[in-house]
Image (cartoon, rainbow, N blue to C red; front, top):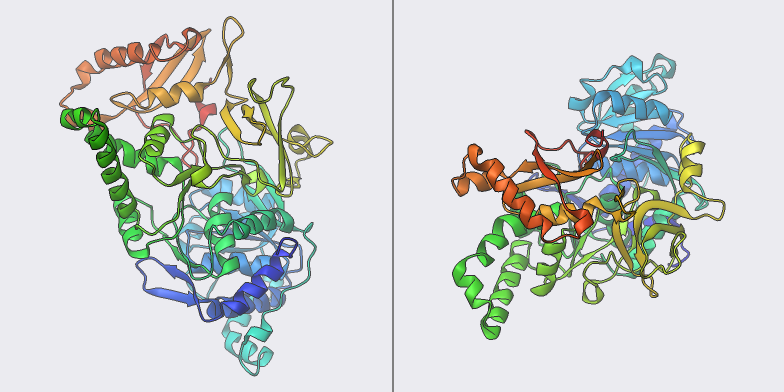
Length: 555
């Protein structure tokens, strides 16, 4: 398995797990077996062939998580074409730019999204296919309606191609080298317009093979997929790895509100949970912190025996709320709030924090929860190397984290300048993250290189570390630390829900925030102290991954 080609892994998995459930849509009562998935993939291969799609051609995919989305992705991958996932909540102009920039020749899309597009503005696309129905939404005259004609004859074509029915013997994917381009993933970065990350079969395979070796998923296990599959994180560990081993994936195509998520966890009972920090931070802020801040609980926590009992009860209730049958929760995509992390570690909740980026498809480091060190982002993968650039003492003195190895991208599509800026001649990817690395390869992240502020006396100030403390203060919903004329200013969006609960009026808000500033300044180093708090009227603008678009507020 260590050296097995990714497409061969899928062919083997689909044959071995033929009768097992592969995909379901939560609340839709629809389940597809690995046999069904294989047949649907074969049908799309015939469609590609009919429409003149060649190996290496680009196929764009834009829609919410669904069975059809997964089928199209896997069909494109196993055909030898290049998949271009586009986040469904990108605006129309950005989506059309990505489709054109990637030179996609086909587009699979939710109909409600395509209703707002102009077909003539994506001229290289031969045909636009619906993700909801077996229907062509638009087709270029040059194809002579090949896609539309094919769909009317699909059952006949399948019978002709597979006269004895589609069987396990028919699951056979092309022998494509691992160096071949497999995906162009356009990042939703917080520093400006997105770039197309070129991921090879080997890059995707490196993540999948690690997931298989680590038994993150296994034959017959259950996964609940609620992160966008168009992101590398959800794609690799909620879809690509599960389908490689015979896991049953339940897709949550709706906005994962807390109420809906808890209902899905209770019904699916996943064996592994992949999530972003926001999920655990909301549970901590809305459910756990109000409990532990009660005077009676605070007093009880001072008694050793009662403390153990209370922590066990909180841990068990949290585990039960998340389905009760998972091995661990893997947190990634953004830093986990330090106070939340320490509390979860204190109650022995089974979680771990990993580190990755789209440019590594995405995984760089991970440690199973029992070996996880709080404050870290896991240990560098065996197939990867990591180092701190220009640091005499990488374990103590922060510098830019650099990585190289199996998972590192080929570069940015049609953007050699951006590629050269992050990939050096020796193959090291300069991540833009600042941190330290222990002698055993465990990574500790301090902040982003581009957001680091140089203090008046030359100290490195990491805004993310201050924000983590500030976001735990009463009546602060979210914050950004920015520099204004050599002064540190905290932009704060207040927690109006907490204010209403505690009957605090808007008139009292300046007084409350001044107390918050004073309390924060007592917790940070002198050079990290905030000069003032500036309130903002609306939530910060965010990327689809829910990261704040910092560049909009740094001016």
